[in-house]
Length: 251
Image (cartoon, rainbow, N blue to C red; front, side, top):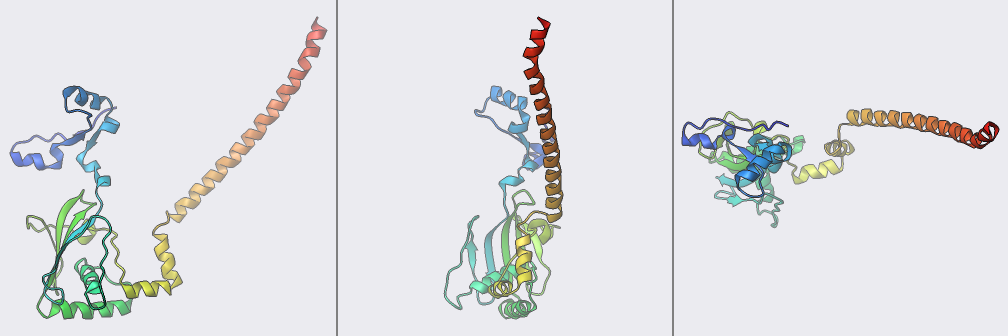
C-alpha cells in the first residue's frame, strides 16, 4: 500500500509550521529502522496532518466580557465538562446568554428571544460593550480563534495573532446549540420539541429503514439457502444408507 505524505518544500523557516510541510509517522523509537518499518505499514503508522480531526473537539477555552453586569470577567474553561454554580442574581444565565449572543445563535422560542434582547441591551448596549470568546475548532483541525461580538455590530473572527479571518461561526463552531432555563422548561412541556431533540441523537431514519430492509432480505435468502442445503443433506444421507445394500449386490 502506498503511503501518502505531506512533503511541501521548506523555503523559509515559517514554512515548517504549514500543515503541508509535515506528516505524522508512528514509531516505537526514533531511528531510521522504525521510520522504514512505518512505511511498510502506512495505513496504521502514517497520517496526514489534516487527518487528525478525531483528536480535536470544539471547545470554548476563554470568555472575556467588557461592559455591563459582568464587566471585567475573564475565565478559562476546562476542555471537558464545565458547571456554573451560584445563587439567584449572580449572573449564571447572563453569562450563558452573552455566549449565545456572541455566536449569533437565535433562541428557539419568541418569549426567550424577547428576554434575551432586553438582557443584552441592558448589559452591553449602554456602554457599547463586547464579549470575546476564544475557541478551539474541531472543523478547523484544532486551531484557535477569537470570536468578538460588540453590541450592535456584526461578529468578527480573528486568529490569536489578531488577524481577521473570513471564516463564519458555522465554519468554526458548526452545530453548536444553547438552551436557557426557560427554553428547557418549554421543551419539557412540548412533545414535538422533545422529539426534535431526540432525533438529533438518532441516525438517519430513511437510512435505517433501508438498512433494515436489506438485512431482512439477506436473512430471507439465508433461510432459503439453509432449507435447500438441509434438503440436499437429507438426499445424501438417504443415498449413504443405500450404499451397504449396493455393495452387497455388487459382491
